[in-house]
Figure 1: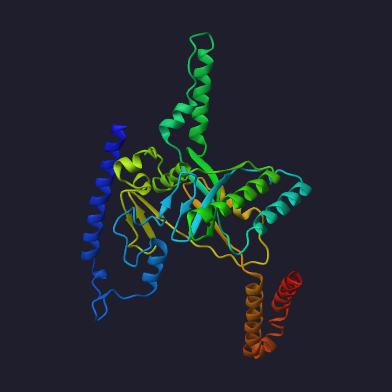
Figure 2 (figure 1 turned 45 degrees about the vertical axis):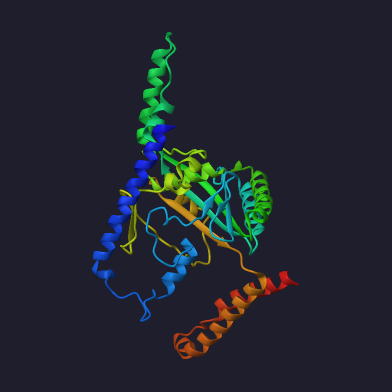
Length: 367
């Protein structure tokens, strides 16, 4: 256990040193010379302060890589306390041969998937993640090597090992693809949250089993390992963690997963230790979407993370939203009527009819 402690202390020292360098760079950056205080001497509020308080629990900027990771506490059973009232749990699930199935089977799978999504009400936040990570090269090579037995079959073992290594070099370059669903609920304390989290967790796993998809919950150390892999995307730094080290060293779980630094000064890209990354937000508005769209994103042979955030809307709020949309369309109709007449078409007939049908469906469900 002692070598691990020295390594953790070394990493912590590197984090502290990098944080000091980042603060010095921020002070010397001309973009940050503008006054951020009110005449009373207190820091000014605004969007950043509210966002920082929501993410990190503090209005000022995080001063270290650990403070930049927005959660409060990770528990052994896999429940993560994000803030005062938000608790989350992660479930990993496998694949199903959807595109190879017959049309009837596809319909059944799709309906089962819709039932799973419809299970989440407005009180449950959901995030579906597909993570492509590079595996540790040494561990991959160990898994490929076939041990010799000292008999006449050793030559076959060597030949098979060479063949597998050759295929591995031609394939996805050691990418490991995993899929997760993370759900979050609000509760006043851990005891209350645990009761509901366990109930929702059981329902989700059972829904996946109905689809014929293997699924299981992640423990706290497994969730930390996933985060460690995301913060160290090359897969070369092995995850080392033991719950017994937390009280003995005085460190937190973040010290075991954090990179040496975060740098978000560039608006388009960010730096995470020695690696650079970028985040893209897609909002797709289309009357139809092919079932191959998500698969095409997930089939990328690179270290990429695709997340889908789902938040159900309360029925009454959904009806209000649709009615507001109808009012907006009526306003557009009045403003654009002359242009529509000159062009020879009724600009709102098709769009408004679609939205009216949606409103009627929501109202029918409510009744």
